[in-house]
Length: 381
Image (cartoon, rainbow, N blue to C red; front, side, top):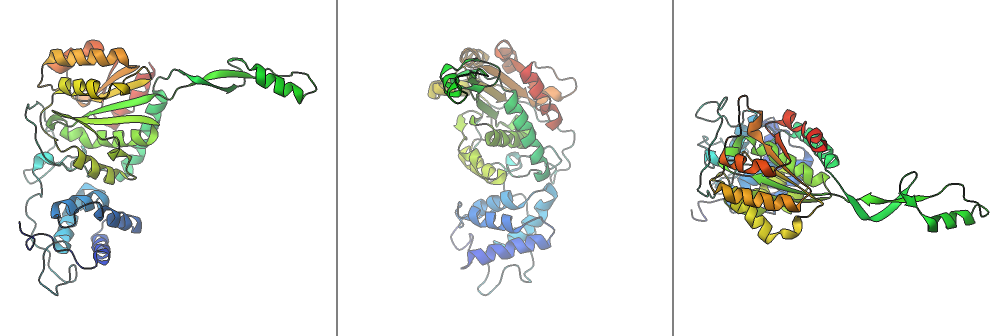
């Protein structure tokens, strides 16, 4: 594509973006002034001459419900397409006919709420299973999510953090009833009480804030669950004081910094750019070996590891078993969340799950939010 055929940005990008957001509001999208400001900030992070980057960046920030996508696409084609000199986008210019999706369907991740339904018919009842050994390079749509459900995910994340096992740290803090007598403080208190000691102050070892290490499977078999799990991972990053997050398929990618973005939509744009190998195969064992080799300092007795995967492994199961055993010996607790465990009649018979069973402390379902709500109780057990 030549420069003339690509995106031709207007001279005043700010006013153009404001008019675009106003057109979205006229079409019924919930675009506030704050989201318009976020869109302007987002455009500063992408190459405005790259139409694909502009599309996905604006869609991540301005689309909050799946049924808003067609209206967004029409407005986008109207406002962000090359025009003849003097034409003013959005002012009486007919919207071009919509074509197919801007990225292949296999890179578009739904939220389990019907957003996967496309031109080939509804996806109701379709369960993608199986693994592929191939690495697929592509940037998925990580942006379709329900904003009203994100608050509930944040509440769940706070409960999960509180349920994580902790151990006493080195520092001590005052406590009214528990701990050892604090003699220094007792002497200071007695000086203000005429030499009498009424209450014996105590100190106890403060619990050390646990570290959370999250490993998210981004393979094709996890597509229908990816959005919910990414919401959970983002919320955990906002609630946990010490957290590290990795995405894996056939390779391991660290996305901790990307998930610290101020909004979920912006975080998903950054994660999609940082982790390009989505929807491919899965080599869980090899990715765990990369983790233990490159990041051994993240694995200690104050760390709880949460692995989110359906267990489809294309690598050697003995490698997976060996690496899980190595990780389990170093960390506080190893938790495996499997979305398929909530499916009626499901049995964990894959070679990956069979290899993992002896080394995992907690197996739990991550099929939907209702199943995830049971996880804090499982962690305390």
